[in-house]
Length: 374
Image 1 (cartoon, rainbow, N blue to C red):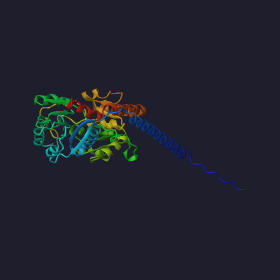
Image 2 (image 1 turned 180 degrees about the vertical axis):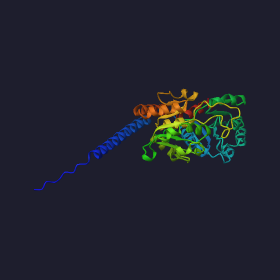
Image 3 (image 1 turned 30 degrees about the horizontal axis):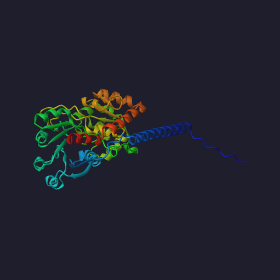
Image 4 (image 1 turned 45 degrees about the vertical axis):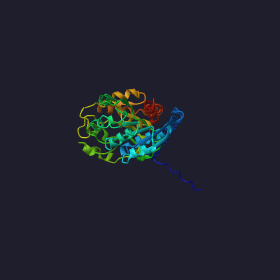
């Protein structure tokens, strides 16, 4: 009887295949475990409020690509917080709409690139409407905002350094109010390999960002990096990172996928003294955080953010977020956290927990309404 010869794979191939299978299995199990914990945090988030307030709000959107997540978060929070919400575009005759709808409050998200006409604000106030503006572009475009803020009954700004300015202009009610996140819209999601990178940055290449990334271009060239946004070709060392850069504007949904798939998300604020992109002749400092801070944390992404003074009122560095103050420190912390996966993910989950409990648009809108209707 002829014996069948048993085929045995060469040892190196067997070992490499087993190692690849094991690494893939462990990574998948770790991702699944992280995803499950994140879902439990979303589910266990503290209830935002009780019954809606008996009020009608006319909300005027910024209605531009950079403000989609803000508009969405504010509108949804308003619908959950008051009896009736009417939403308007800044291009329409909002004053006429207000006359017909008779809202208890007109709230405007006034964006520097698409500012709402103050003539309409004056018409609404003359007709007895209570008005409020929320300014998302301070202090970078404070020169524009000084001509807008005094037309409103209430001024809310994301930048605490701008509060004294508007008070000096005679605005009767000025308040620092950061933006936030809507965890139902901006959240951790499962993604495929297209979105998986060790390091991710989403944003335009303002000059300070281009200069910063130029300093670490050699380091990033050897990493799995994804940079997404406009103007990155202004970098001196652009060619070193060209294959890692995508010059597009992302929707909030696509942005959340990139955050969810990255091991580390860099958040580098723009500079307050950029003469090319800013209109801030008073040189008002930028000490408060950008909306992106909350959106990254709402996706349960590990975030390395430049160390701004206002950050410490919102998160605890080393516990639920991590910071850097120089290119060298950023590189050191990237190296550390890429090799300490569980510590990295635990910080990200703590950041998610704090965000869904303290830094949602529902929380911000409730504070705004408390101030206006107190």
